[in-house]
Image 1: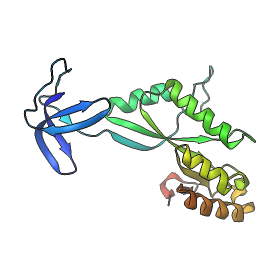
Image 2: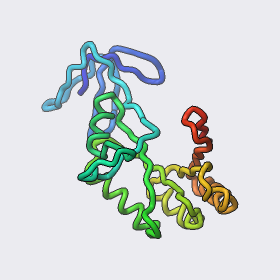
Image 3: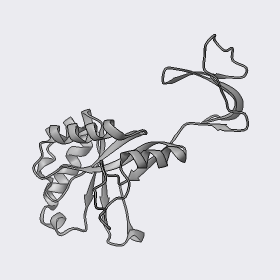
Length: 195
């Protein structure tokens, strides 16, 4: 039971208690009865609200022994801790296949890495890379069924121009599989656009 907090929902704000059973909120209301043996958290003077979502992070599964100056400086553990400290409970991280890695092995690898060291919930975004030919309808359906929600493409890379038809096919196949596509089109961060 989370008691005496200012509960914030899409309907508004109200002073209330929140009953949690397992990992689900099952009741919100004023002065809810407390079952015997229930753990109680006093939230007086605090906001009780859904956790936030950070839709765009770049975390490494594990940090290298020697940090690289242009690489991400957080791993799943430190990135989760920082997010949770700020009220963000879900992080959307960008991940990529390694070389000619099979799609099933790719999603198994990144899922295992998240499960091993993340504390927050994760959403996975896949980078299509320099050759979109692997992004077949069958492969994208497999990724969607395993929780990958979007793909990312760098349209400013020379590989995009030489494979534009392949990327268009991948975008269409992504949509049909229920996967969003985001495209980075400008070299300057101030001109970034996604769709």
